[in-house]
Length: 298
Image (cartoon, rainbow, N blue to C red; front, side, top):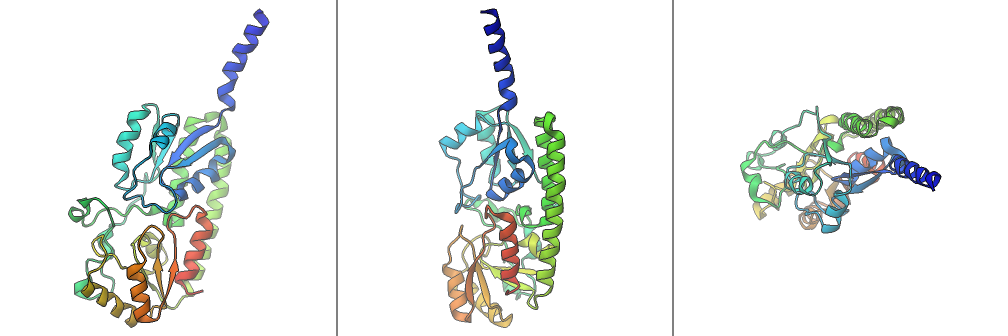
């Protein structure tokens, strides 16, 4: 009986060592990043499901239950996260919330509203929110840092550090995986640079201005169909059509999280084609290459 009791104690003590960490991320690209480093040491859950916008999503009760059992939440610092994080902290006081954007200098949304545009189009490029607070936040920080491979390197370091702190026994494992992921990111950056440099047209039009960091990194200009986070009015839409004609844009980009109506109108009036690009694609690396080729017209 005493041996059995000792055996059961040993099993109970050892059990947590074999249990996977349960971690949450806000969006699917973050899951890709965490999995490159954690591999089979963690189960990664995504808060915002495919096809939904982080700017308007509300966590479901089932997700709150999962969060109550999780070790780490990797935040992306989207403004809408602030409301979630308060709820999340309330269900799990032991949950470590890790800001993956730590150390990253954010671009301001307002800085890129009027690249070569008419004075009447200076409002282009505002971040979209389903809440009304965006009207008071000209110059707000752009949260789309996962769309620049160089900035993802910084995010990866923050992820690896948090995993190592939560699971120090596997610190070397995480460090080795981080090193491999960093090499992949350098290669991806070089590939995208070659693709975009070969493109004659350095301007692209997209409904929602998610691609500011991508544009900055590769010396491109993003033109947003959204104006002040809202669909353009008829006069504004006419100016966008003129811009697309003037710049001879052959492709107008839509995103699955937003309506294609205005994008399709511009394409119809200019003879351009509509191409879908997804800033929240779970297959992040392939999606980045696909987007670079689409913008370059390949």
